Amino acid sequence: MDLSILADPGILVELLLQALVRGSMYALMGAGLSLIFGIIGIVNFAHGELYMIGAYLMYLVSVALGLPFVVGLGAAAAGLFLVGVLIERGLIEPLRQRAGREWLLDSFVLTIGLMVILQNLALVTMGSERQGLASMLPGSLSWGDVSISYDRVIILGASLLVVAGLWAFIRFTDTGKAISATAQDPEAAQTLGIDVRRIHTLAFGLGAALAGLAGALLLPILPAYPTVGMQPVLKSFAVVILGGLGNIAGAVAGGVLLGIVEAFAEFFLSAGWQSVLTPLLIVLVLLVRPSGLFSAAGGRP
Image 1 (tube, one colour):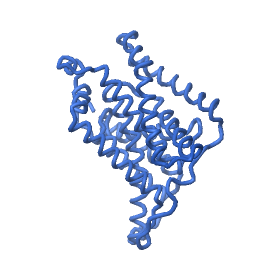
Image 2: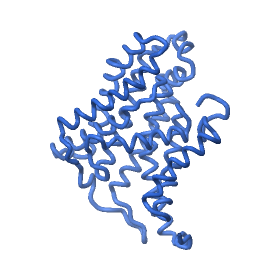
Image 3: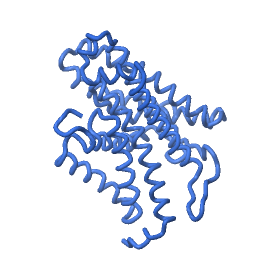
Image 4: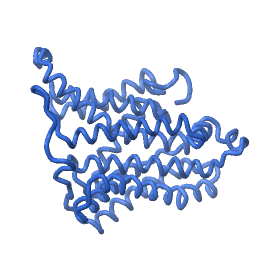
């Protein structure tokens, strides 16, 4: 491991750009998973399959139909929002009403079952062949010795815009404030006249849309296939643990941190080491600070 190469600004900038691109995608996935947990209280094990559906929608719109990639991104986000709404209203809400106090435990089984169903539906309808997109926008952006493809510029820019938009939406809009109130105390929020049921549906839809958008953005790098969501969802859980369960801002910070750790580990060690360092980092965080690195000490994330 030769640390002297860090004296080269070009290499350092490329590493940081790679880390930010990777971290931005982890942040998108983690923010969606954290939003669903923070509002509804369930751990969505089918989050990776929402990513997979978004990737397939991007493929169908941008490759099969030949429409501009921006249309594909919009279709993935809007389509997964609708899918999330249907899942919450058609499966999770009835379970909450009928299962009583044990509904959270039952929801784990429900989302695991949904994961298996969606994977097999994709296998039956789309086949096992990997479906990808050569490029959203060919070419690269260069300055000096540093070069980054336009695809990665789009990934980074879109991720930053979406995360910033989500933060502004929750912080400054009435609906966003209702989401925050529901996350803090659902019963008090309902007493104040907030339609908690609608907020639950909206939160699940937004979380699904973030996962679908991540799948669409990564299609040029990671082709779509039925089990493509397994790796992204594992990263999402890692990000959520780092940031604190239910902490959206923490999930974003955790995603960036994980992206930096993996990018530098892959460069200085080997690609296999990131598979060791990531779970090791998670174990250390759970031992030292179980509530997450970016959540209030001693409080619920």
